[in-house]
Image (cartoon, rainbow, N blue to C red):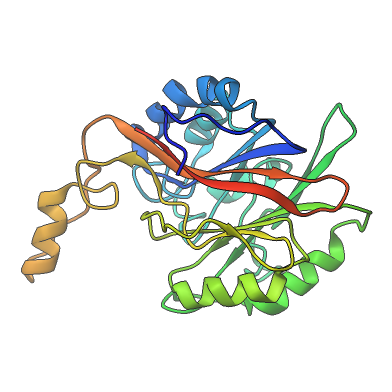
Length: 275
């Protein structure tokens, strides 16, 4: 685990930081405080963040998306709450070059795109994709495994193609299955959605970097970014209790990984915790 006091090894290839679900204002403020210093300390080239909980804990809107970008985040992925905020569909459609929704939502009825590309001045192009799982997640969702195949067929093929994939899913087994399915065919596969970081950052046998869940960027004083008292009431009572964002200074959870532009594989990966 790489913490704020730990030193990262010398960079090899393209260094990418991917941050877990940004939850409300504490998460956005944590990005503003920490992303640029973190980029400098780690010599990171690209920062990606999942922003699907950034507006009030559920959804994203133009204001929160631009606040995330202003913090130093380059690309934003989403999930099951992508279209929960008024106007989010139009915003995602207009800004799909850097803010993407899950690819395997019905294409004929869903604004935006499921993958984007970042062409860097050094000649390296990074492709970032987004999928959503079906286990324990309702709604009109196409098969993520078939969606992964279609998405990879669309992304331009090249020697050493770099692809980072955010798989927004509830079940750890579904995420692991996707990791096995895509091992050697994407550079880095990260899970999001559960807001609790798993201690399994690793490089799979085929060279794909992997973690089951990145964790959360938000207040650590509550329950997965939400007020602890409200969360406990929902577990212990039948009385309705709308979620509220937990107060307190935010933390950052995610991974940092070095991707090889020659092979398209992960050379090094570590869990990341910025208290």
